[in-house]
Image (cartoon, rainbow, N blue to C red; front, side, top):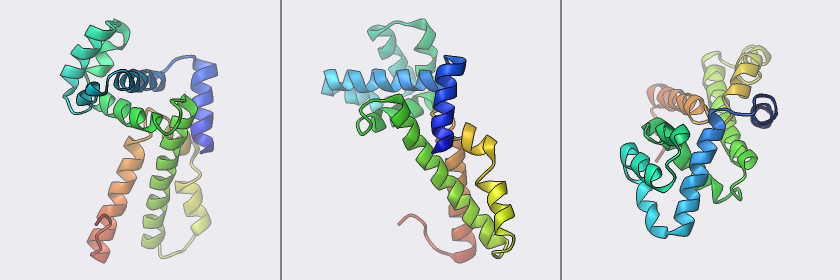
Length: 170
């Protein structure tokens, strides 16, 4: 969570711009349009090319238009738009949600390595997985807050299903 806040503050006050703001801008656009007209929720289920055309018709800002046309970027915008319902549409609170998901993924990765290592050298393992600044800092913002932890959840699920024959998601 500290990484999420530190990343958000660095992007806001040091850089002054960044992809995270673009994703937030896109989520704000989506949530605002749905609040104005509930029929716009259909764009949550449309391909990125159609959402880009819709954005071009509504706003027409070429600086952001290209981001709406890429499916992976649009997915993050959609997730952030859903989270904005619970976060009063505040950038920092949405980033905290992404940071919580990032920490949960890191924790699952730690559990996998802990099990593989048979509970030996836990402090060293914690430093290598949980306390690595580049992972908890850069991996907790809006930009990579779904990609990295999603990979960690995948590794955890694969490990549990392969070695313990358990289903993680029922």
